Length: 144
Image (cartoon, rainbow, N blue to C red; front, side, top):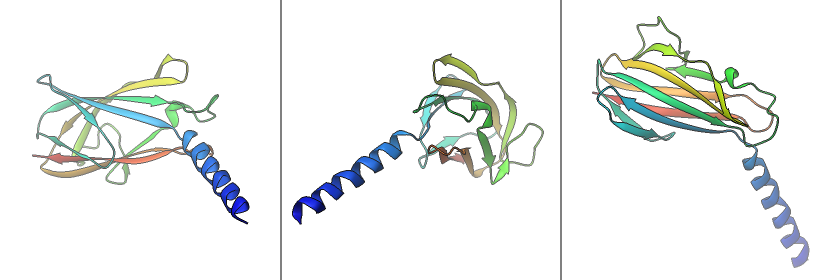
């Protein structure tokens, strides 16, 4: 009986590790106009200053081969609304967004330029809907 329970535990662990390995990986770095660089991690807040312009470098790494979901299908939701240029009522004003470019096999990059509009907090959700795991994390910003 102990052998069956042990074997079952190994199978469950292998399945969980295999599923996690298939999820997309995203990395975020913010560059301020005065030269500061800050890494951004989901769930950890980053402080921004009002009326400052920032560039966010986004790196998307495919953890599985031949991803069926293009990099361009990544969705950015700010305050639960699609983040687009011209939406000047949102706390982060999107100024420009480059297209995704593949910098190495399975590694894509994009640059997003924005300015912090008003004091408070902002939540930017990044979503990749994929049957092999996808990505759904929130970047938190404190605006002073």
